[in-house]
Length: 292
Ligand SMILES: Nc1ncnc2c1ncn2[C@@H]1O[C@H](COP(=O)(O)OP(=O)(O)OP(=O)(O)O)[C@@H](O)[C@H]1O
Image (tube, rainbow, N blue to C red; front, side, top):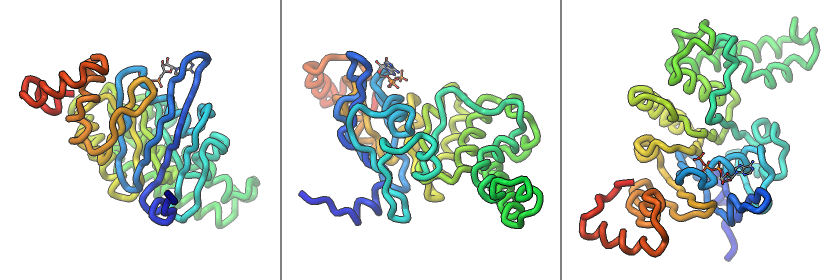
């Protein structure tokens, strides 16, 4: 059946088709397909070792997939095959930004400086890549002003304005995570990929993070996140995709996924043939719905 490209481009920001990734003898991702919708928060979940980070690394150019097509549809109608781009182009041209499981800030620079460094590419382009440009070109001065305004905007959204002049390394863990997200947002992405943004956060920090992520979505940036903290996933996601052993086992709304016997079985670590048993237990109320 022919695909209606107009509808797909409008509603879909990322389309992953038949993605496979092999490491030697291990098929870490096996014929995995899903779509992330524009303006939504899509969560990629699954037990440890399911392949979530590998999928992220393929989308963001850290790995070249063994097979598959990863299409990014920008809002201006342009399409990019991510697997064919060089890693820096995935951010610069396709508009995809990411954060990592381990925080990667410039800890000796201030919070504000971290947000300005993220805009280095735009500033250098505005300078015409010359020292004269840095010293005098009006385009550079305008770009520098815009960069500071953008940094101030994200400082405010990330609740970090009063820490702007402190070294990033002095922030609490939760604040450093928000700074990483603010820094990624300063690159103006259309798709923001977050690898376990809630890892290591206390409940209060998790709530602040949820508000920040919802705010980013409501302003029009689509989000794709890997997360182990189910309270965060169920609270903020519009769409959840579940991986197990590199294959998709469920895909739908948070409610659909948390009541899917295959997902419950995967998280409880039972075999395929025990899924029916779990379905029966769900029916009889022996296992509570949403117990994942
Ligand atoms: N660079 C690599 N070389 C070899 N094997 C790898 C590599 N990266 C990942 N793997 C393997 O691929 C499988 C999927 O790993 P991956 O890190 O993607 O899972 P994950 O779902 O992100 O796990 P976790 O939730 O523990 O972070 C694992 O068996 C892992 O050992």
